[in-house]
Length: 295
Image 1: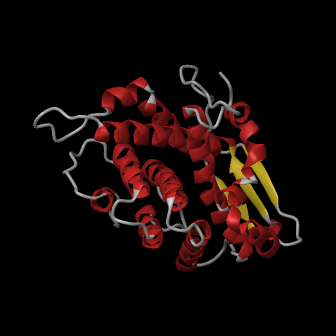
Image 2: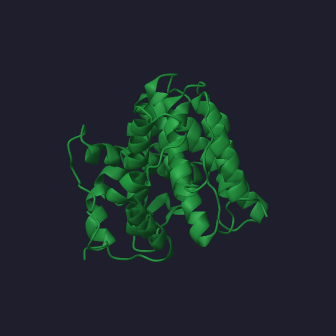
């Protein structure tokens, strides 16, 4: 069986471009005002799934297990959104009020990819022999290409979060409340960097979905191993990000984000019918408040 290093190392050479690619209108600003003339390093690690920065070294570490787990969540997110949006728009049987995507999700191995992603949160493990690994350079307009696009989009938010830690000169050894403030500030930096100049069209919708995929990775991480010392609960980070989204009532970004959150985090609860995408997303958000309570 291939290792996560063998599977994801080809992705690594593209990782440094993701913060530029997600918000190309800010590329010059990122290069000149954030990275500046100093040397920054983007490095790999062979730990369990994790991403972290060492600000004093201007270094960001991406674990192979982290990349593999994020790709699995991106795979699940793309296919859930694809299956559900198609089903929602298909002709329904008389009296049908719910759609069931479980069979098609199983056919696309979505539960298996999610299970493997969650296993990687605990320890690096070889890629399962029965799961197709990520294709490295598929055509963009194929399903495989779109999955990779979601992966790199979500990775951009994660890397920008770590960029913020370095840019702000954050430190590791502080009281917990100050560490938590650093995390909120890094989240806000990443979210605003991606959205502030995104406009109000499809680019914004896509970017909102990418942020939600990254946050879904965090929700599953917390569900599996806990939030970690010095990090706020994911539901609080989610609230902060949602406040910045600024999308319309019929937002396709919120619609697909709702599908992803519902299927990956709350698959068994029946969902009522809603008139707008925002109403559906708000209902899913309230479900997350119940599933991830502040204790």
